[in-house]
Image 1 (cartoon, rainbow, N blue to C red):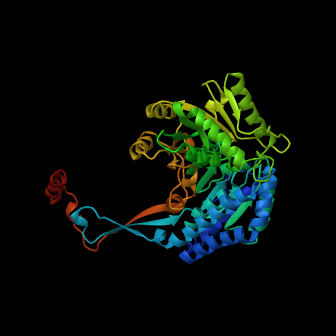
Image 2: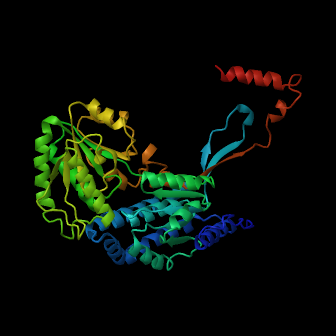
Image 3: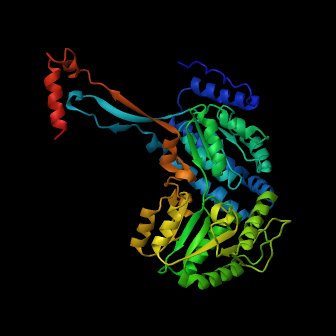
Length: 483
């Protein structure tokens, strides 16, 4: 038995192509039986095939969009991590899909059964950023397809080469009833968020996230928002400083610092500040001897490059110390900007207020852990924090007193690549999760079901209450439960 087709969207001002594609998927979902475990696994394997068979062309398109993206960073972030996520999802999906038995309340329902079943929502909208576009598309689709949904993906206007490539590739692997990719045309993003999706996931800036959420609210569309924020690292005095510098600067230079979970600023104890600077320069001299090599990723476009320059100039003009970690100057032609430390900052500087999203690292000296806790907690909750300490009690203090989307202890970024950990923000850094079981649940309806027993004591509760047995039974249960 098939469901009737859904009504057309009443907003005729929306892009006809998007509107038509949405209802193609929506009607297909309503007219089809829920996907089986085998069908869902098949879709997940097809996602793997797309990457495995086309990764060379995909990496090349990403690099053209950036101007230059290190192929090794693409291999790690857009291939190895994604394939691992898909493999983990396939391996665990059978267990995730199983109905979950629940306790039946009150003795009068003896013989009844309760359980919860995860069911697909329908059509999910996906708005992806430019910084890790393949990672974002495929890891989010892993959760969406595992839950049995259809998906429409809206690409960033900065991913022009990749958008064109994926549109041509994906249609060879999936029917449009299951998956479609859409390039930004100037109005696509605005119209996309207004479609009556069954769920909408957005990754990007907090300002744009607010607009997406406002658009989705008109249809009461639930949203998952993966936003940014200023993620701090905290180096305790007991932790080997050289090791902390190596790990923090690796994370900071990765993708040219253009990562929502990158280390935005670092707390260094006053007594370790000069050593931190010296070790940072030594690491860059060894690891990034030439910012113009293909190993070092470009800033995405001229506007972003200019924004980084203006952030540095603003800090310099207001009294900050600017310490480039290499003798090489920024290259505006290739949009390569060297790793740069910024010290002696004040609250009126841009770098204190806004996410840098580039190779700038603000350094804040501190004396006590409570200074660190107070500084971070007076600001928006970050997407991640990175405490470096071998003191378990101190680490737990930071984790317990500072709320963030996620945590990596004694390193940075790596919690994002753990397939069995949920990824998501909190407060201004986002809401909702994907990755792992939590991602599967995020795009499912957890449907509660009760099956009543053939014989129950429910009839004893029927009116007349005062003269029948209901009075004594309810009073007894009230006293029993209150003990």
